[in-house]
Amino acid sequence: MEKKSTKKKESKKELKINFNIVGKVVCLLAWVAFVSIAMQYIVGYPMLWILGKATFATPLWTTIYSAVTYILTAVVVIIVPVYIKKSWKISREELGLSELPTFTDIGLSVLGFVATIIISGVILNILQGFHLVDSSQAQNVGFDNLINPFDRIVAFFALVVFAPIAEEIIFRGWLYHKLNKVTKNCLTLSIALVSILFGALHFQWNVGITVGIMSVVMCVEREFTGTIYAGILIHMIKNGVAFWMLYVLI
Image (cartoon, rainbow, N blue to C red; front, side, top):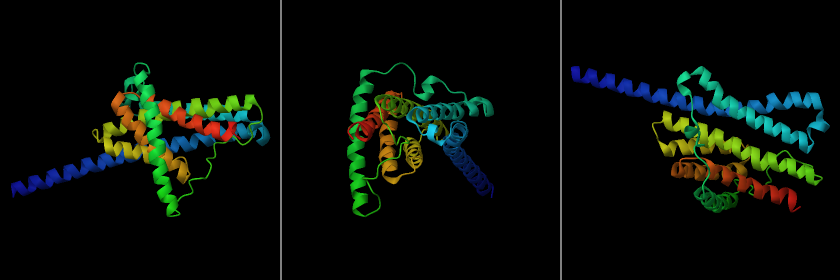
């Protein structure tokens, strides 16, 4: 009887621990998703109200909106939990920003970009064959009218500089580290969750699949190098190529 009672207690304890882990994982994912979406409205609507629709839609103000949104999202996602839970203080190393970028990071970024294009291309072609996704659908990046060189320059900084740095710090830096810690270094689960959320937040099937695959590659490279620098560079290359095709070649 005592053995049965002990087994039941151990089973209940294990179940409680599992539910505790699931709850923490859900809270982490929900927190990043909520802040990422909410900040767009918190920054966007006041700017729209103050500037007016015509001015707000210009490349310069769209860039300012994007930069402020990315910066505030990163700050809120990372800093607010520190005040809620004192033990959640985070270092540069935990964010993947220790040391400086290396030639290894540069080489891995090129390989990672090529791997992303090949793998996502194969998957998108298969899904398109079943009419599940339209791989030719263009991504809406918020810049509809880039008329002159200045417009292109400010848009370039928003899409190719600000976005990759901020998103990598949030997703492959803070979120990936926290998920690893909560799931006791279950890397496969952490990589899958970060990548699914990152893809879903792009709200477009073909883009979501591509960036989801890219996220998997960048998480693996973070594990290999211990930093997110290769991921930032992959992200910059990907956005840079997209920028070139959307706004320079046309």
